[in-house]
Image (cartoon, rainbow, N blue to C red; front, side):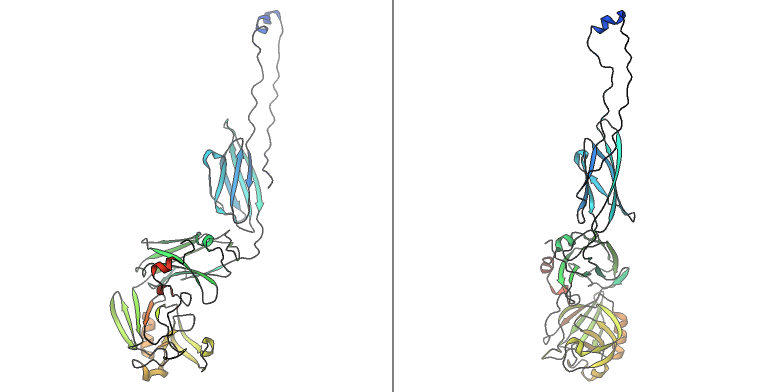
Length: 389
């Protein structure tokens, strides 16, 4: 890096007139005196140290102290920072972003109090790869008490601790929670922030992801992200596959119980057990068994579809299975109910409501990345998934 150079002011010339006469002889024999004033101190020398992407901007001063620093990008965004003890250096709080031109203005002060200003600029290299994220739930939405704050990354994250340090969650009631890293069903890296227990209704949650200038290992982030959401009613859906019932509880009391039919025992058509979270209310959709790896293909339009896992488990209307509601599990893995019950249930539940599923004949517990399966881990197990644990 080239040092920042500032012009050196010219010293003012001083004209001296000396009258040598007999009257001055006595003075001339005394101590020798200089008629020239002391030279003014030169301005401090400042330089920008290591202005590279992924590192804070640092400014140093020699021969003086730093009185103020402004670091601004081409869009007007600034990097705030702080001066070190003694005033000999300044470091930005944020890292320099890749592919960005910064202008650095430094005010320095000499020991005798004189200030000078120097300006320079630098440009960081363009990133080879840019990482982006998908956030859930959506901004300004209201969700159920089990919905985690979830971030899916487009590119691999091998520097998880560096990324996690840039993620700040704030809640309106100091909710205890932790980040955990999982592999999303899509195969991509994902970080979820889950509270220790289900959210309290009315909780407001905000995320500040100050990722701009952070290297994920698989690519650079070139922007920050912000989102926020609110927790709605305390609703829990309990599905008992042994009794073939679905019960909706709200605020600790039972609202209704619905006869259902779950996945057929004895093979791939079994349902999942554990806690699943309602991911989306998708309405009427086409369901094709080939997309979930089932051999005996079905292809039909299904009403009041409520997604519970990425692997294809839904709660939905299944009028073709009417003889089995409340009696037997004869579906292809989903939780089916009558059209009438599905319509009213669909209207009652919210994205983010937990479905607590029990039953002897199931094919296992919902995995963390297959939808929002973090609730199937103990609190200690979940906290251990943090990259900062």
